[in-house]
Image 1 (cartoon, rainbow over the protein chains, first blue to last red):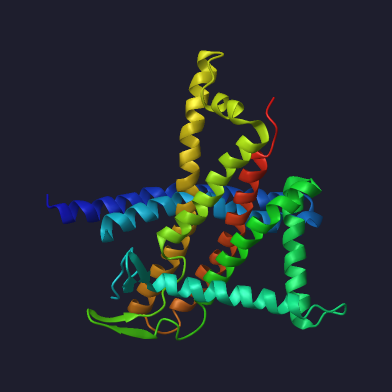
Image 2 (cartoon, rainbow over the protein chains, first blue to last red):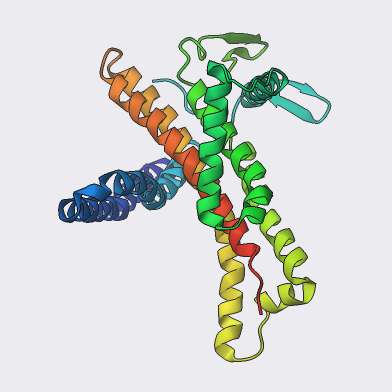
Length: 75
Length: 242
C-alpha cells in the first residue's frame, strides 16, 4: 500500500478510536451530574461549573489523538 | 479548501530569530494586556469606574479560585501572579480570534501573500514554553522547599523494589505532564481553527456559526483548565515531604 494511503487510514483510525474514550467519559460525567442535580437541585450551580472543567480534562485524550491525526496528515 | 499547516508562516527574520505570524499577534496581545492593567493601576480610584470595576472583579474572582486550591494565604500570594498571567494571556489569545477581519489582513511576502495574524496559540512553541515554565517551576519549587537530597530521593528510592519502580514511573509522569498540558491546549485551539475553516469551506453561510461559538467557548474553558492545572501542580510541589 502507498504511504499516503496508509497515512490517511492511520489518521482516520486514530481519530475514530480516539473519539470513543472521551465520548464515553463525557457521557458518564454528564449523566452523573444530572443524577446529582436531580437528587439535590440546590447544588446545580456548583456542579455545572465543575462539569465543564471535568469535561475539558476528559476531552484531552481525544485531543491527543486529534493532534496525532493532524501530524500524520499535514506534517 | 484552505491550506492547513501545523507551523505558522514566517514573516521575516532578524538574525536567527524568525518573526512568525503568531509571534506578531502574541506581542500585540501582551502589549494590550499590559497597557490595560497599567492604565487601570495608574488611574486607581477609591470609587471604581466601570473599567476598574471589571478588572478588579476579575482579579478578585481569580484570587478566590487560587485560594480555594491552596487553602493558604501565603501560598496564594506566591502562586497567584503566575496562574493569573497564564490565564489572562490564554483567555485573551483565544478571544482575540473572534474579532472579524483579523485573518483577512495579509502581508505581501516574496513567497506569496500570507495572512498577517494567526490564532496566537495555534503555534506549539509558545504553548510548550508556558508548559515548561510550569513543569520546570515545579522542580525548582520542590528543591527549594525540600532540598536537593529529597529531590533525588523522590525519583531514586532504594527502600523497596516497589518504591524503586514507582519512583521511575514518577519520572515518566513528569514528562507526560509536559505533553498532556501542552497538547490539551494546542489541540483545542488548533482543532477549533481547522474545524471552523473546514466548515466555512464546505458551507460558507450560517453552518459554521455553532462551531465557531463552540470553539470560542472551549477556548475560555481551556484557559481556565490550564491555569487550574498549573496551580495544582505547583501547589503539590510546595508540600513538604517527610
